[in-house]
Amino acid sequence: MNKYLLILLASLLVACSSPAERPDNASDDRMNDLVMYAMSLADTPYRFGGNSSDKGFDCSGYVGHVYRHELNVSLPRTSREISRIGQPIEQSELRPGDLVFYNTLRQPFSHVGIYLGEGKFVHSPKSGDRIRVEQMQYNYWKTRFNGARRIR
Image 1 (spheres, rainbow, N blue to C red):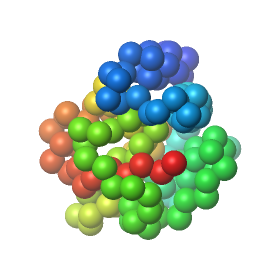
Image 2: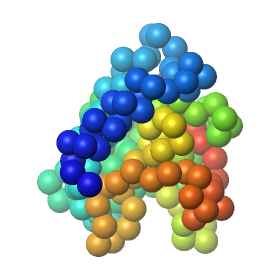
Image 3: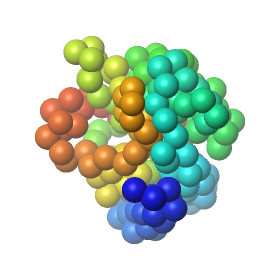
């Protein structure tokens, strides 16, 4: 999908998210900026151990880069370590900018992405692939969901 279409989709998701999904007014603009920046990196290739837009990202490198760039927050390096910080939240409490975790390698919290709103998240999936948006309701993701965290 075209990078600019993905950015437009993200802005529409944030703007149309239900009140329950919206961050409080103090952090609303920051989270919108975070989501927009995350989407601006669409089509960046996956790279194991990667944490730069020039060379590519793995999932935790991508999330860490976005949080550092937009919120000046340094996250731990691995998805498992990231899953131990912030506030745990229920899936029903997700707001744009929250982190979602999955068991993709037969290990809990082995994958992380950024929630966009409307049941979608963006992530750096796997070798040979690029940053993209996914539907959380797809069976693959639904059966592997490990939880969510809010880092603010």
